[in-house]
Image (cartoon, rainbow, N blue to C red; front, side, top):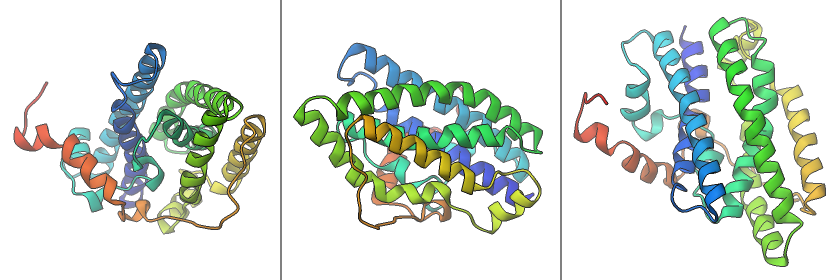
Length: 249
């Protein structure tokens, strides 16, 4: 089913691209504990991406596996959210990006567990266990930084001001989603948006952070329209696979 392939590809690309971004912190974390934590979260996401992209390859039925989908596509063929390809910036910016996504992913996986597609439901159930920890980790850091020193507060507020414009795309729906929603495969986004907003506003209140009042909305990732940042990331991520094709570890 073409729609199921596209839908699974989107979810897998989200995990893949964010996992790649977080892996850039390996060896560069502000403290050893956080270096390890961010690396472990990256590994969780890459594990999710592997499972999802392998299943997407099965749905496509053209002989491509997870490795081929991860490393042998051009930038316009990736369907990840724009939020997730944004540069890491400082630690506060990375944590804010992670929190905005985690607060979405938790209710999303909770809903996807009820999918009529047994494979997606099973992936969601396993991934939810990891995502609960991811959300706990990122939300605690948002509070700590937002309600911390003047500098930490200002930096994480600047990160929120910069990244908020990408959050509307979290709840993107098109004809692919609508087809799968009708079949009970994909969850509708209305309830998930409500839960997400309640989560982020609650945490921001504790963190003394203010949601931006502008109405900027950036989208396009789900349709393959990306920022310049993805191209640079893919050049690094795909180098080995393209230089030494068909190699297996």
